[in-house]
Amino acid sequence: MITIIDYGLGNIQAFVNVYRRLNIPVSVAKNASELEGARRLILPGVGAFDHAMERLDASGMRPMLEYMVLEQKVPVLGICVGMQILANASDEGHLHGLGWVAGRVKGFASTPGLARLPLPHMGWNDVKPHEDSPLFKGLENDARFYFLHSFYFDCHEQSAAMASASYGQNFVCAVSEGNVFGVQFHPEKSHHYGTTLLKNFAEI
Picture 1: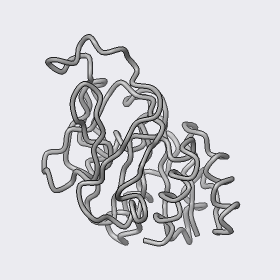
Picture 2: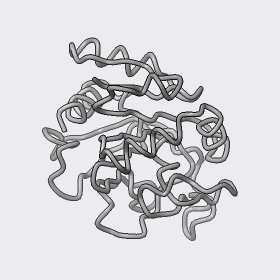
Picture 3: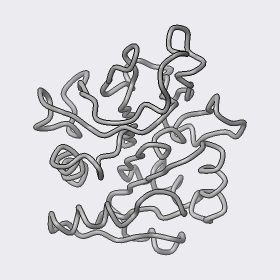
C-alpha cells in the first residue's frame, strides 16, 4: 500500500491518480491512525520550509512517521519541499528539519555565481543519476523532470546524493539514505518519466 501523507501541502490527488492508473493500491493519510498498514510513504510539499514543518507538526503525524521511517524502516519519498524538510535545516527558515538525510537546504540566490539566475528555477530539466539506483531504474540515460524551486539540498555526505541537474551549476536534485529518498522535482507533473519513477518507488 502506497500512502500519501496529506498535511495540507502538495497536490495529493495527482499522486493518487498516477498510482490508480498503475493499478497500485494507494491511500491518503490525514492523521496518525490512517498511516497504519502503509508499506511505502510519500511526503509531498510546496511552499516554504518552516511552513511545511509547522503543518507537519500540526497534523499530529510526525511521531508516527518518525517511528515508521526510523524504527520500522518503511521506505519514504519526499518530493519538492517534502524533500527539503528531510534535511537538518534550511537557509529559508529557522526551524529544524526532520534530519533524516544529513544536509542543509541552500538558496540559489545566496550561492556565489548564481545570484543573477532567474528564480524560481522552473520548467523541464535533465536529471543525471549518480549511480545505479532502484528509484531511477529505466531512467539511467533518459530522464527529464519538471522543477519549480529556488532552494536546493546540500548533502553533508556525498554518498547521499543520488542524482543531479544543472542550473548555473550542478546541484543535487535527488537524495537517498537507507530507506529515505527525496527528489526536488515533481514526478507527478513529469509525464512518463515521473510515472516510471513513482512505479519504481512502489517496487523498492
